[in-house]
Length: 158
Image (cartoon, rainbow, N blue to C red; front, side, top):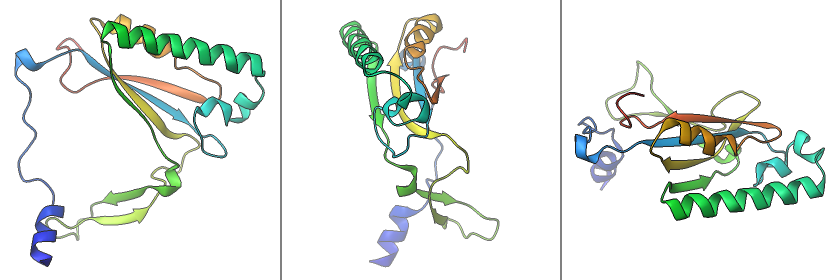
């Protein structure tokens, strides 16, 4: 039984297969970095800068976000999204030169000793980088930053 568990938990032995040309699409990940206190979503309601905004402002940005979600769902540009839990609940796995094959070091999170943490992400599939940038700009918020990054095997020009 222990051997079965060790086998399942060990690191993969084969590299990821790069998709063929016909499999490639222009996908981008919108990474949302923030540090709400207490941790919550939408994160702009839980940051110091977000607390300084009026309820009217929050309501308007909520309506704008809903309209954007409807738009990218209707156009087929929305792929998936996920809000992430408090970084304090994470586990971090690492490697050391003393590690045996398949053995990893585990510590409790958060991963980075930084002010901002990854709060969530959206994956979008757009025709151009310019369109991806247009969508990502809507995610800018008080007390956080947004990063737009192409997927590993997106448009060959990226």
